[in-house]
Length: 437
Image 1 (cartoon, rainbow, N blue to C red):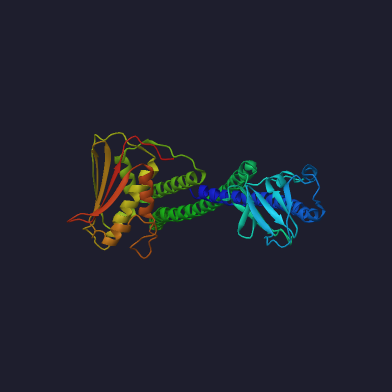
Image 2 (tube, rainbow, N blue to C red; image 1 turned 30 degrees about the horizontal axis):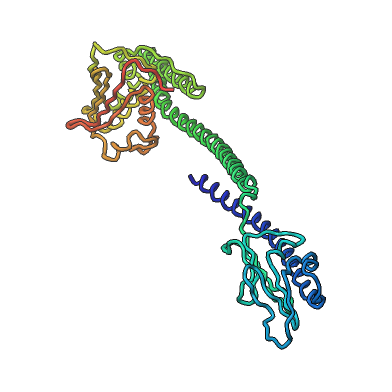
């Protein structure tokens, strides 16, 4: 709307300027015509002063009118008669009086004998306040008035005229509409292209920042995920080394198997990291939640034993098929169990974790409850925010990564406190969904 108003305003101003200029040209041309008319009338009037002394009493009227047709007749009179220099006779005629002779002059005939006839919408010849001749409508746009420099006929020649609207070059006057439309169109196109370039540059910068932030988040996440299996491998190896030094190798194979399982977990985490960097799609497989739960408990065996945490589960046997990347579900459970263990540090023999899996309508529902003190009001609001943690040595990425994985599986995760227990995390997964692109 603003662009249309600007175009309309510029068009009107330009058209008005052009129209005014062309009208000024018409005025100048009509002013020149008036000057010509005035000069011709002045010449004719001066002939009257020159002819009066030459008019003999015996001269035939027809001969005089052949030369000066505006002189209708003349008459002699005595010098003693008191006569005004100019006497109006009506019908555009007047008497020009001298000492011994008076001549009757017809102004319409005089105007017809002009060498260059110039027509105006209004033409008048006046002598002081007396109008000797008038034709046309006096209500005109333009008006010219000039006195005749004659001692005997000091007339005022007045003319008036109107603009010739039809003679104006309207196509040229309205041409600014097309010009300003083109200018505004080019300006709009320039601004559009500039916005596109700026937007493209901004998107490129934004994408670069996202990529850098994502790499930073992935690196921090991998550090968080690799920290526990590396610590577990070190513990298993140290325990195996002590048994060998004590010449008690019977439990060494079990410890080495556990270390190998942790190494395989690291390999899977690195493969997932590579998938995120190369935009590869993870492989969806049927998930056996019972076996996956046992694997998570085995991976966290050291932490569970150190904290003397009792683990239990209630996994329904008639669950709907659940398709997902196995490592994602393992990471989700691993992070929640690890947080539950750390939340119950310092409560030996009373620490516990319980997993319940059931079907609710068409959704798969996982509920993990612990025996800790629960989450504070602040933690309930920010538990899934990156880098939020209640532990001095924590990174605050475990639950943020868990929330990201749940969302990629089109699921939801909620945190709350349970009366008589600790924190409770509830996950809802719709069946048979694929990863969002």
